[in-house]
Amino acid sequence: MREITYLEAIRESMSQEMRKDEDVFILGEDIGIYGGAFGLTNGMIEEFGPERVRNTPISEAAISGCAVGAAMTGMRPILELQFSDFIMIAMDNIVNQAAKTRYMYGGKAQVPVVIRLPGGSGAGFAAQHSQSLEAWMTHVPGLKVVQPSNAYDAKGLMKAAIRDNNPVLFYEHKLLYGTKCEVPEEDYEIPLGQADIKKEGSDITIVATAIMVNKALEAAEELEKEGISVEVIDPRTLVPLDTETILQSVKKTSRVLVVYEAVKRGGYGAEIVSMIAESDVFDYLDAPIRRLGGLATPIPYNPTLEKAAIPQMDDIIAECRKLMNK
Image (cartoon, rainbow, N blue to C red; front, side, top):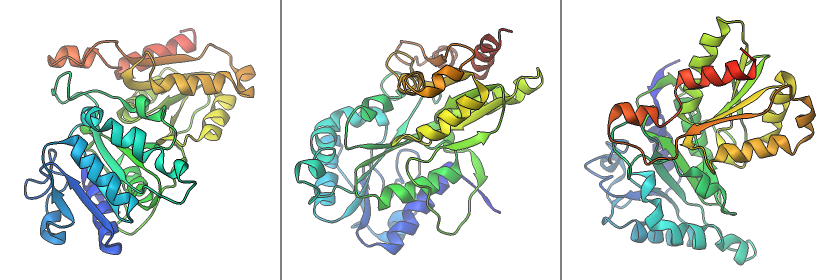
């Protein structure tokens, strides 16, 4: 099977859906001839034209308002915000309008909009362009939140997001854009709310999100050399969350570490920890649940400090050793 990048998988998914459904279109800043801030929409304006690949003014409030309005009138827009940090400027349209419209109209109105959000640190974009704010959005009823960790998942989840009749926030980690894996060219969809066991193990469950899945897999490989067997779970979607897959894994291993890039305080990992603690699986634990997140600091521009601000493979290994009392 062919290998393509995470970036190419998302582009292919959007292009395939646009060919199938004329109501699907994309809009955002510099997404036309320029191809977007990260080049993800390169070539799309040549195929679909400026009506369906719409360059917009530099106003996240205006772009999100257009997207939400278009969705309410029957279109299926895909909105690209250049950096996930900029969602703050669009919060009223997303949180007060998109998230609540279907409920307030008793299901008679739908808002099938996808909001693409390049997020995460590691690219040297400093404090205002490197945040991981997905936990904010999971707090809002009516929004679905997706966070794929590889190209295969990104394509299948994007198709599910575009076809969904609810607003979906699609978080793409900037450092994953160049990563590759096997991705079928044909159509496939990964249902929202279906976690994936990226690696099976018997001693510790690591629940990791986005790029931390890759780091957890690297840590698991090193820990195998010490005789520690790690199971790695990728939720893939934060809302809805596949609690059953996580709980069954924790029940099997009796130890769990939750890893995410966002600031540890108030991060989505705390929700996963609480879910486990409030379940019957709590009685199966042989050690306290551990949580590993980013430091409570704005992301530094300095590359050494930037790396130090978020969990790395060695940090994951150290936490696992604590769980095993090693």
